[in-house]
Amino acid sequence: MRDRLPGPAMIVALAALLIAMTGSAIAARHYLITSTKQISPKVLKSLHGAKGSAGKAGAAGGTGAAGATGPTGPGGPPGADGQQGLPGAPGSDIVARATGSSTITTTSVEQDYPLTGASWTQGAGEDDMILGSVTIHASPSPGAGANQCNHNLGHGMIMYLKVNNQVIGEEALFVGYPPDFTALIPSLANGSFTPQQSPFVLSTGQARTATLTATVFDDCNNGTAHYTLSGLRLDVIRHV
Image (cartoon, rainbow, N blue to C red):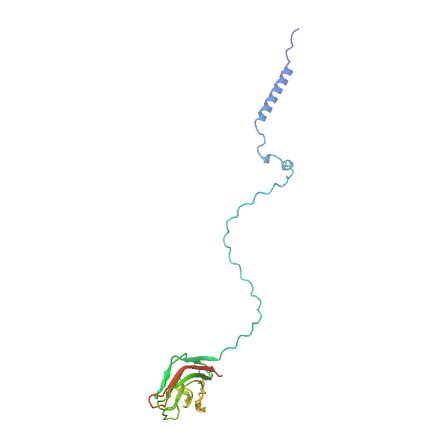
């Protein structure tokens, strides 16, 4: 029995099968879709899987460098008024305090007692008053009673208070007092300021610089019995 050769239809079918298998092999080695733009958005959306659970927190990073200083912000609104403070201590009415800078021994010749701090500004319409003290040591004269001297004027010692070289007060100390004592001004022992020469620095009607001086002398003419003064202090007190 002789074998039958395939007919034309069989040959065509075999050729088509061979071509189809060859194309599949080629397709397996090449991508036909190379971009998501080639896929429909609806289809692309359906290809995403469900969101997975959060992973563990990572380790803390290191401290970063300090940032630059920012600009100054706008000023805030004014704060509320504070409570009223307590009353202050009483102020002093002493406008000047003149002090004797040395010890001085009187003679029969007038001399100024050196003073420091003796200048001040007297305001317009301001009257001032002078108060003070001085320590006096009286030397006895040879052959005479303690604190005695030969007087010409009937006083032991005289002090003039002057402001800008004008006498405002005169104080006379009579003899016969203890060798050392502190006398008050304007009330030296047995001395007084006369009404015409009161210890006031009256206003001149305008502000001025006033300077206080003290001039002293005695009327002991025996050459040895004189007075030694120390610790002179004169306070200028605002009176008006």
